Length: 209
Ligand code: SF4
Image 1 (spheres, rainbow, N blue to C red):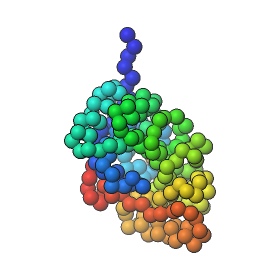
Image 2 (image 1 turned 120 degrees about the vertical axis):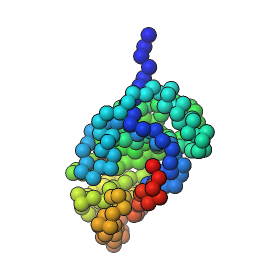
Image 3 (image 1 turned 30 degrees about the vertical axis):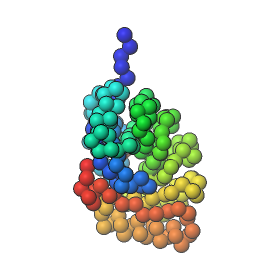
Image 4 (image 1 turned 90 degrees about the horizontal axis):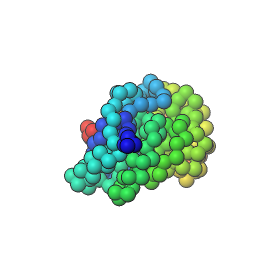
């Protein structure tokens, strides 16, 4: 008998989407274990290793339970790096159940997955992405860490269509990150970089999970 498809999971929980264009929307988060990168500023280092195996059926059942409780119609597959595992069967199952699926990815792994919203977050040092994400991205997010230079902002902005919003995302809402973000934003505005904005982490301000 074939073994059921399982994924390594850190946690499943309901909250509000705290970042990006979907900020404030009730969302169920499925945090997958493992990441192909090791960013200094990572705020989910606990997802780099470990996790527990969960079947697609069990994950869908948990999402349905949380939807019954909260009304959340979106599921965000995040990590770690969700594309490090084959999440397509889970995304398909969730969409069959009427969810919309968001994927938050560092975009270094070009795995095709059926999804409704792609949050593409290139990471240092190179801020490189697989080319397929240039047209897939619904939004682009750059964490304003000390590694983020204005040259990198310009390069990433130029890699995507002008209609794709780019957010300079504060690192843990810190004052130093805010000062850096405002400086980058001013330079971007003066240079006429399109669709470039400041991003905050709403869930951290509101102390939500
Ligand atoms: S890509 Fe994301 S999850 Fe992975 S190390 Fe960097 S910040 Fe953390």
